[in-house]
Length: 302
Length: 289
Image (cartoon, rainbow over all chains, first blue to last red; front, side):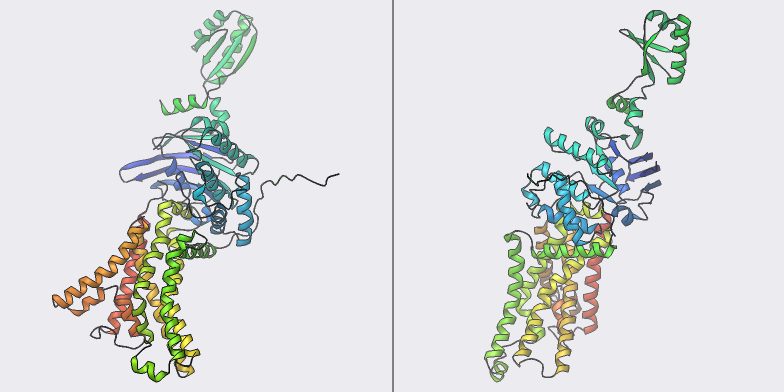
C-alpha cells in the first residue's frame, strides 16, 4: 500500500521553539488519528502537509508530491477543516461551500450540485440556505466539514473536529468521519487530543509528544504490541510459572491466567515447551491487547 | 400500488477536470467584489457601499441634466458644469469613504473570521490570494473612479454637450479610462495596505481616512507654514490621485509647480510601496502553527 504521507526527519522550528524535532512517519490510506496533547506539534504537522510552512530539515511527501514545491497541486487534492471558527457569519452555508469548491478548481455548475450534496451528507440539507452565523456550533463544524469534503479530496485533514460539540453531536460527527473513510473512500487524518474518539473511528494512529513521534501504526498492531502473552493452562499453574521463570521470563499471575512478558515468539515457544514438558493443556494463549491509552501512556512515558 | 422508491444518494466521486489556478483566482476575486459591495449579504452590509456609490453618481446625473435642459451659453457663462478632471472635486468625500469601506471589508474579514486559513489550504498561495484580492477591489473602486466620469461623458455626448468630434470623444474617453484606472490602482493599494495592518475593519477604515486627511494636513503645514519644499505635496495621498487626474487631462492641476513626471512617479511609488507592505505582511503571517 502506498503511503499518503511520508515524513523523514522532519524538523520545524518556530524561533527558538522546536515544534517538530525529527518526525519520521508513514501514514497509510484510511482514517488515521494524529494524537497528542496540546502543543505536541499536531497542527504544525498539518500545516506542513498543506505546504503552508517549509520544514527546516527533512523531507515530506504528500500524495507522492513535495508540498513545499508543489503546494497548489497538493492542496487541490486536500480538504482541510481547521480547528478554530473559520466561517463568515453572514454568508449562507451553500454559498460558502460552493465557493470553496470553485476555489479548488471545479467548474461553477458542478460546484452548485456538489455543495448541496456535501451539505446533505453532513446532515445540513434542510439548513443549507441559512447564514452560517445563525447556526449552532455543531452545525458550523459540519459546514466546515462540508467545505473540506465537497470538492472530493483524496485526503481530508480534520483539526479537532469535535471541539465544542455536545456528546450527541460528537457521536454523530465521529460516525460521519468514519463513513467518509469507509463509505466515501476518502483518506482522513483526524487530529485530536482525545484517545477515545481516535480509538472509535481510526484505522491507524500517529502519536506525537513534544514534537516527536512516539509510536505509529494500525490500531490492531498497537493494541497487540503489549509485549506479552496471556496464557491460561488447564492445571498446575504454579509449576508453569516456575518453569517460565526459570527460563528468565517475567511472569505475572492474574487469577487463573499468566501474563508472560517478552518477545511474542520467544514466549510462545517457551510456553509450548514448558507445557509439553509438564504434560498440561492450554486453554488460551493470546497476545495481551493494550488499550490506546496504554499505548499512549507507554509512548509518552506518562 | 405506489410507485414510490427510496434512493440512497451515496457519495459521488468527481472525475472531471480541475480547472487551472486562474479559475480559483477569478472565483475569489468575484467573491471579494460581492463582499466589498455587500451583495448576497444582509441589507445593512449593502447599505453603506451602495449608498456611497449612488452619491458618487448623483452629481454626474445632475450635470448631464443641466447640460440637457440649460443652453450652453448660460452654463458656460456661470461655469455650471465642471470639466472631467474637476468632477472628482465634487465626489472626493464619497471616493475616500468608499475606499475606506471596500479594502478593509475584503481583506480584514478573512483574517478575522479565519477564512484565510481555508483559502491558503486550497490551490491558492499567499501571492495568488493577494492577486485575487487586488482583482476583487480594483474593479469595485472603478465604480466611483471611472463610472461617474463615463456617465458624464456619455450623458453630455447624448445631449450634444460633449466632445465635438469622434476623435475628441475618443481622446476624452481614453483620458477618463486612464485616470479612473490609475486612481483606482492607487486607492486599491492604499486601502489594502491599511487593511493588512489590522484584523479589525473599523480600525482599517479609520486608518485609511486618517492617512488621507492627515497626509493633507501635515504636508500643507510643512509647505505653507514652515515654507518647506513644495515637492512635499507628493506625500499628500489625498491630493496626489486627483492631481494625477488633472495631469492625465493635460491640465496644470492644483499645484502647477510639480512636474507631471514627479506626480506620476510619486503615484507609482505610493502604489508599489503600499503593495509591498501588503505582500510583506502576508508573507510574515503564520497559518496553522
